Image 1 (cartoon, helix red, strand yellow):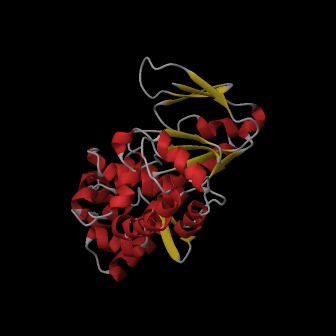
Image 2 (tube, rainbow, N blue to C red):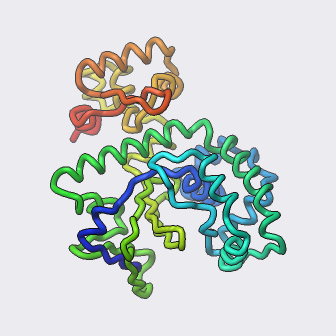
Length: 310
């Protein structure tokens, strides 16, 4: 168990962000694991990511650790992959060597490691995450919007109340249970921010990253399983009310999606998907929010209750 002591001032220093490198690291571990929720994604990739020897050596799950320099604390709420790779490239070789050794990985020339590692991270991202990235970011954006709205009432402490089943909040600390009967490891922020990073590939876990560069908590965002599952059929009462196709569109939007996403996942013509999205928006069941050059649709509170039967 880890116990993070939080003062009232610490709650005011909570920061949300979505980190590409957090998704790279956790997805690389998920690709080599057996978590059921990623099985369709793993099958789609097949052997396409073979040959990334430097990346796989640095992210070897058997080593029992992840070098912290691979996951820099975000400097903005929505960093790009290239901005985070620039931070990694600027890491001092002594720190790289120390963190590799701590993770059980030996490299004679840590500085020479960085160019091929960055190239392979870019290659991995293009193969494994690029197609999924707009929906990964939209899901994180939706999670952050939900959390910040919740913080308005009943208050900032509610940001931590239900982040994850293994996280337990009491009035002065956040407890993370890794395994039963593990020793208690108390720590505090010492006036530094805590970055909350919704990360789709964390699976059933929540991870605390405590490094000289900062502290972050990775956790799965709400409705993340919908990103990786085949589209679920809509409930029969909902289909009877809205029609089968429109109900399927509403059900799909558990994960924020663009018109193109909806068309692709449901096998619709883009014009047909747009027609149904417009009708659902006009009915107050979904809203549209721009994310970069994409327009993503997500449930309103009414749409969420209707689609889930809540």
